[in-house]
Image (cartoon, rainbow, N blue to C red; front, side, top):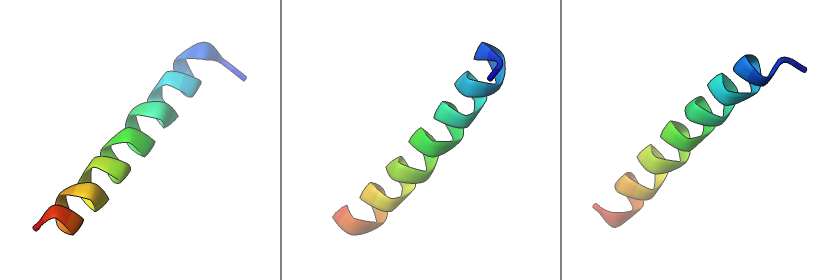
Length: 26
């Protein structure tokens, strides 16, 4: 897998998790 693609997926996953945590905190 391309490193660039991997970084993009990591960013999306991180954002998704951050949103879930934010919702939980609220």
